[in-house]
Image (tube, rainbow, N blue to C red):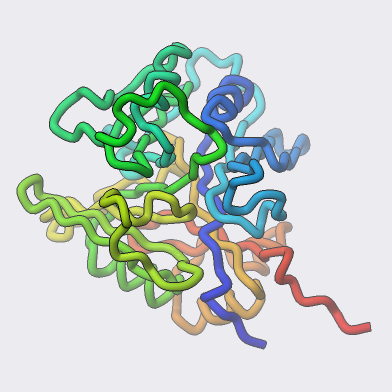
Length: 322
């Protein structure tokens, strides 16, 4: 029994939401489709899974575990009518840790205008600040949704329309205390490939983009934009210089108060074999496969105590011999 990390996928990112109706409406407006719903009335929560699922999408029609770029919305019953319930979006203390999710689009100016015209707010518009090639919209809970372009700004300047079928759930960003430790963990333990590094020495931070590339990693694009802009299922690690020298935990994993972000999830070819490998590598566990009632999922902790769910890719599940 063995596992092959080249068959693994960064399947989904989970965030908690106050009102699923409002959140689903927003993400559907961005072009995502609800591809699955898991109801847990006994435990008083439901899980909604959304992804880009049109004919031109990367994983159109696939089982929800056989995809990258899935967004899981967790709704705990009653929060929608609780005026005191508020989500922590991860970008301010004491809940700072998770940063954002990112959607890449065809015509960024038209895409941002469409979002603004619909009445949704922005943390940063394209015209704000020095970075005119990215924007950050805000979902109903205040989570940041980065918008990046798949084409050069000058090429899309005059575009009046945007095609939702071209959109991609590109990446999810978390802040890490120690870049070296986190990169070693995600590469050596989780089997990811470092696909791109963006150094920002003047601003005192670096960005690292990791994932499970199905083939050669593009180093540059034909049109000069981010060569990974059309990808899905990437993890962005943000390292602010000097945090590695601080004592104790620097960032919040989102699973204790104040709550918001929950986890990222990796789907694997053989969950039993994968968990045995993790055991050999002496990972820190939040939940082993054998713990509790749910014997089909596990949770590994990364160096900052972010949770990484491990699930079986149902398409690759081995069938028992008859």
